[in-house]
Image (tube, rainbow, N blue to C red):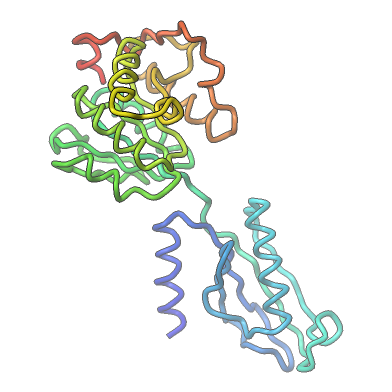
Length: 283
């Protein structure tokens, strides 16, 4: 029964990109709460199953959560004398292993499957993101997707915004300016994005700013949208160059060094296109 429960719960944690530490009783001697082979999953805010409760479980949980907070990746093994070390009346000896499983991944949602998005997906799939890739056109997606990328073909991309988890990263780079604008409104309306970037020129940015202001959006809300996006020093127009530039900004952002505060106001990031057919062609 426990094995089936553990498999199901671990699968859910992996699906949600929620890291945990698996605590396993490797060895039991004398009187101990649970036999060897018993497992418990510890996340930052909950326990799944039990290794018997009491002080042993309390100490094990504390150690596991310290590992999660520190981002430790190595297996640890600890031996506990339940009487001398933990003061439990049952005595006995238990050896526990602490195995970190999974890493905390940020959720990146990419709208649009054009040339730049295709180049970008291959880069960001190697970063600590789980990725949802959304477009209305099934035929524009590649036949094979990198690991960690979920394709969503949707007739209503705006509706998809409502189901995204809080604190997600958004990149809008569709083939349609009106769709870009409608997505911008939906993302800003949520008010909980960790990052929201849109591909485009300063001219596009100004037009969108004006349209949003006319609809009653505040400066704070409007400024939550980053456009143009990318590292300013990279000015090439090839999709791969743009993709590297945008990936650089994403990395800087999740490392705590957002580039939007450093970008000069006159920066047009010319590789991101003017509001012209070129933007439609490579976005």
